Length: 476
Image 1 (cartoon, one colour):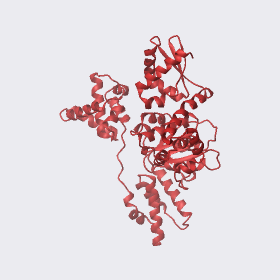
Image 2: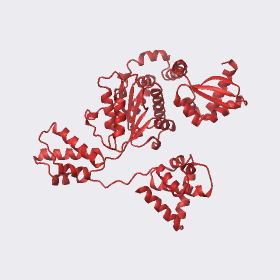
Image 3: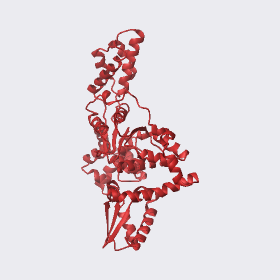
Image 4: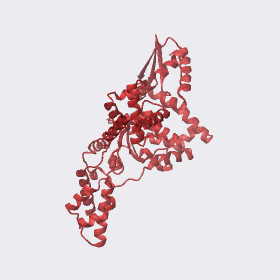
């Protein structure tokens, strides 16, 4: 690359930084290199396939515009992935000075000295890197498999049985489910299995523990060592990601996620909702999470609930040999306690306590009396915005892409407004989130649509019946 090209590239990067902002530039363009300019094409490279696909999908026009401001004759941007050997050295040179400057600003002393002293004792000085507490009962051996969790279990097992240096099949593995359906059990099982006779480093952290560790490292001015230690983990397991808060913490999590995945390390994550519904997280984090294997663990069927009950009774018998629960009682519990696995375990614990403390056998009458507060009414179906878009599109004979498009024809505008109205009335999503799901519209557009349909259904009987029909279809 000539000096002229290098100067142009520096000016283009400056324009790009101004155009997208410092945070976006640092996340997506800091590791982009110029390979050369030929004819009407600019050849650029990035170190990973993910960066390439993301930039092509979201910023290709922006990059081309910045180049055309320097060279109007440029009409095409070619983006390639550098080989590992080609990208290793520049990446180190690009990131080290920035890290060193931050450490120097924080400490008032040269960065290399701090790096030498802080990296070695990092595990001792950062409690978070010891991991979150593990429950010895939560292993693969005690996990009960059913129709709703078969795929999640198989994926977690595949991760746990991997070895250092093996190719990663899917990364990250993202498991989501409601409360008490077994996602924490699977994540802890992965950690127990990974740390049993394996040469891999497996670290289990709740999102809260990750936040605590990062904030503590900032306070003690050892953030650089904390980051380096995290990036040395072979399998990072993060639970309850929906609780990850704070702009700087989320940015650090995103950088850690990128660094581990780019280095071929495994990441396993659990949350109570899919990545697209984590509204508090940055778009960059959501997109990276969605790029792996996303698995939902559904509600527990009656057969699976019965299996869980039998497993818990067997575990209780290991310590209380005389404890016995008749089949009729187990059937009753499996049929009536439908909410989650923790309620099932609580029911067995109650029966055990009542039986042992009162020296009485477990009967159906006792079970009905002891667990009546655990028998909850069936929760209404959780409706997703994607379901609303699909059902509305089918009702009005348009496509889902029409609803998300900028088209303003009457046969598209009305269905779009109805879909926005249903999204506001049938989900807990905010107006900005609904707007984002409808092609990136402003929240005021959603508000206008909601008010428009609210006014129309009061005087348009046909539309009112259509809306009620759509609600019934979505709630069935």
